[in-house]
Length: 112
Image 1: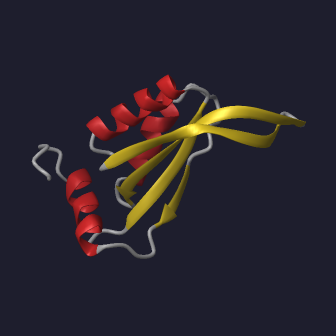
Image 2: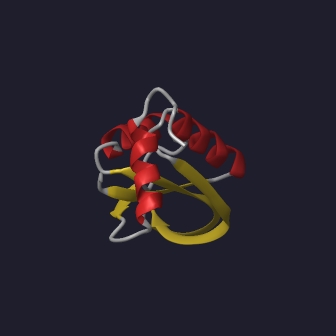
């Protein structure tokens, strides 16, 4: 079974998050996406402390598909330097992880 990853990013609006999520999922770069929010973010940006409202996106994919997923996010994200982080899924239900691997590996769109 492929090594599965969870990929995180965030946007400034629900609409932007949903658009990114649809694009990534429709392209089979991720088996699924969740939009979570709004969340309050506290951060440093351009040397200043900031606080803002963001919408998180959580993608389920594989390590093999990550480079294409990252490229898609960088090309389509509304921010110039977005947070894009992938973490390995150390464990999970084998049926679920198998579904993730089959879904992103099936460009024909026949995965279930």
